[in-house]
Image 1 (cartoon, rainbow, N blue to C red):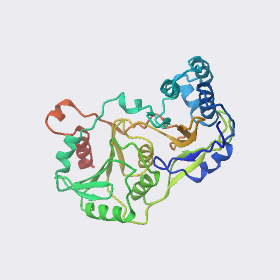
Image 2: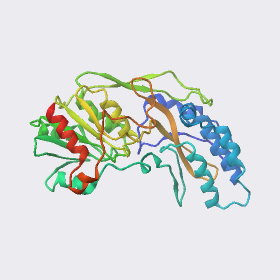
Image 3: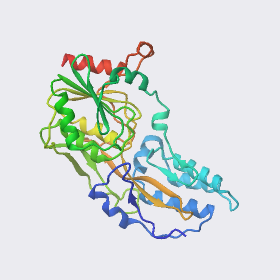
Image 4: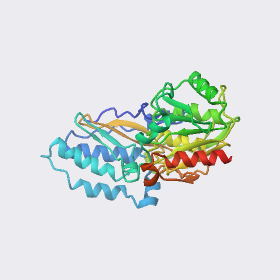
Length: 344
């Protein structure tokens, strides 16, 4: 039976703000049998009542969750194995086209990675090592050095890697003589929103509006709170006062996507590279009658124009890694950023 369905934050991906705290009280304690049909109905109902992007995705590509129910219901039979049930449930969730939607089982994880798998990577570890060399500095989750043209380079590959205020003070103090800074977050698929905010707070001298957020208030697809402002406060530590370029690709997702959203509003920042992968829903989790965990987007987040960034954020300068540069051991996106920052 599905009992005491409780939605809770998955802090390894994002930290939920107080706005989402009331979500758990909205969850019904419906009961479904631990059968293939019961697990299907439980999953469909949980998503139906608590997923946050139905209207947006209906506008984007015509998603009809009721039609999805009718189509997949026919695929369930009492004698299905767990593997067969998992496959059909995973296929149903793929209709949402959401990287924050998963099923976790002892034998596999259902996932949708089309947000980056269907696009050029625009990133190469081999070429990056040419720029970092072997004598780069490390401060917790950050690798950094000064490039030959006196531009600072900071590589933050995952917001799951902890970074402290003291670390950021040391990094920015060391790079202070540079006339500009590159922050490379390509292939950063997210982590703790706290770390994204900590880093972005080093690039504004005043509190700024960076976006909006809502949370679910009921089971209806349109049951949301009013838009709540997201504000970025300046850090009390060392703050960067010179031009900064943020490098992005399609594998920038979730908390990293939010970081790009924040930096878009910082006065001296420029976004360079490819569109980000998106992931603008705060993820929460629940459980099926069979004991499998599910994760889904429950609190939608928006940019300063109240537009969803679920499917990514466009850069200020669209740049791709070229085959010619790759063959020469050059990173087209880094080189474009260096040239632009030198002009500034």
